[in-house]
Picture 1 (tube, rainbow, N blue to C red):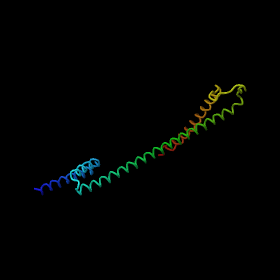
Picture 2: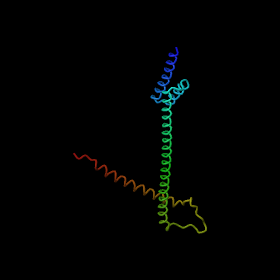
Picture 3: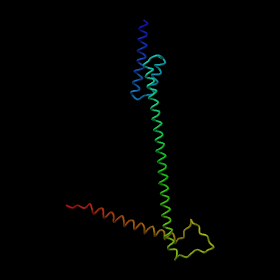
Picture 4: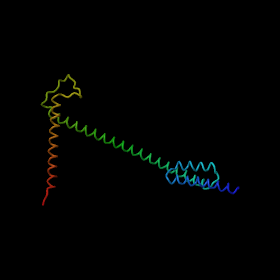
Length: 166
């Protein structure tokens, strides 16, 4: 009778072991740990369950370390992306400033013919005279025409190379 009770206990411990191992194989680590813990509660001295518990805990630590590394990599990537965006924004601002300076230089060259403001009046840098605005618009329109001409030239050169030669 005592022999039967020991056999039933061993089968129960084996049952917990196999269920826990199957859960681990099916990538259900937390469920596997829970099953093994339940088995160890009923069979605290079972060598197989204790060994499996140790392996599952090691695996859980590995997963946590991998998750931490992944989070660190994602954070580094986000920081790098932010830096690139900042650099792009700075470059954009610098290009915009250069364009504005060029426009101002073009406007200064034609200022000799323009009437100069009276000395007593201060000019607000945000306000542009109607004549200056028209000059800027004309300069932009001329630049656009030049770009379109260049684009058409390049396009016509590219299309000439694709003609059928048979």
